[in-house]
Length: 190
Image 1 (cartoon, rainbow, N blue to C red):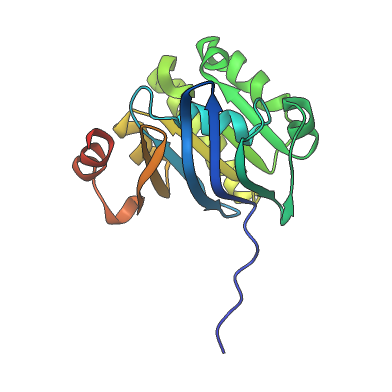
Image 2: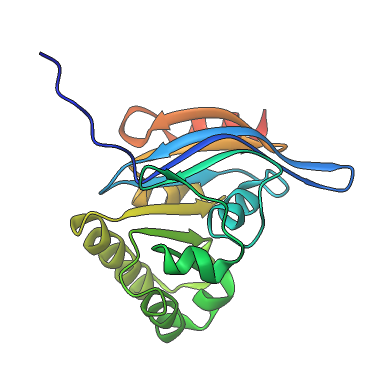
């Protein structure tokens, strides 16, 4: 008898987001499991930050479905997402160093899903170690972490699984242990 898989913390199905004539996100679909770090990789303009901001309630999707903890949601704001257990830490909070990153995470009071939008961009090696410890602690507690980045070294340091976006569309999904930076770079570059 096959074992049942628990419902994912987050399921994104056919997500679309437009800004006027710009189709920023085009049919992106993925799942995030409890205890997992999923990297959303891509270059500038790939749509990775836009996907993160839709998940965290900053923007409403124009199409598709977001299921959090098994229920379909349409957050009216980032505050609504935070109240439902979705935290968001952006690059600007990471620029504030350890205190900014810690405040950003504490503001979300033990989120079940934490979205980290390029937090490593301004961190020193010591703070990278603290970020790694934070991610592992959240995973151990059953949270899911979405790590948005274009930096392959950091993606492979933190992620269990990687999805790659290019021009708003998902062009690949890999388990980090089953791929390498060269393959992910090829997916990112097309």
